[in-house]
Amino acid sequence: AQRVTQPEKLLSVFKGAPVELKCNYSYSGSPELFWYVQYSRQRLQLLLRHISRESIKGFTADLNKGETSFHLKKPFAQEEDSAMYYCALRKDDKIIFGKGTRLHILP
Amino acid sequence: NAGVMQNPRHLVRRRGQEARLRCSPMKGHSHVYWYRQLPEEGLKFMVYLQKENIIDESGMPKERFSAEFPKEGPSILRIQQVVRGDSAAYFCASSYREPDTGELFFGEGSRLTVL
Image 1 (cartoon, each protein chain N blue to C red):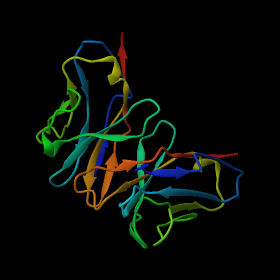
Image 2: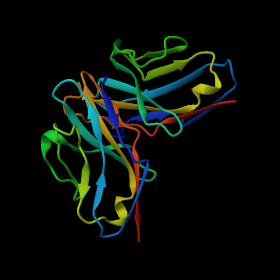
Image 3: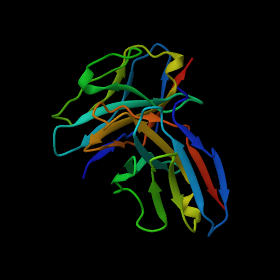
Image 4: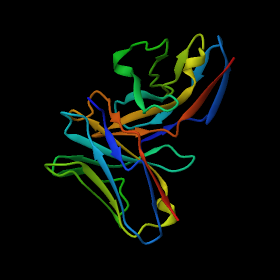
């Protein structure tokens, strides 16, 4: 079955330290993966998608098919990065989400 | 563009009553998705609709839940004879077409509390 796993419910990182939010997936095909973010009092929104190979707000994510992972990384955390982050996988006509990781940036 | 609009934002129902949640997609979007978020859980897909058609309802409970997206008006998620376990946040999202880019635009959610 297709599944997205985010092993950490909460991740606390000091400002300026590197960030890595883990995401593993299971999918019997060529996966399309995304990261969504929800800032406080805002709507859930797309952060980045693996096919674009883009860096958004300093975040990048590389698809590793061997490890079936799509970890989200940022070299230097900023206070405004505090938010809820969801890894997601496209299966046919729908997007499947993980349970999310709350990122808390410590001053 | 006002974005995806959901109402009501908060709804309280007693066990056995009906709950109706409405979702107006972004202007020009003809695809609507409903997700449910239970406490401590992620977003669980429920149903995907296009105008007047249910495309994928694989995540909908078999009983008491139904969804529609009429030609005119908002999409509606209807829960009959609610039970305490239905208490959750229900999110609607829309897209211009099939999510081939993966981008869904979300509403702020409707929080249902069943007493």
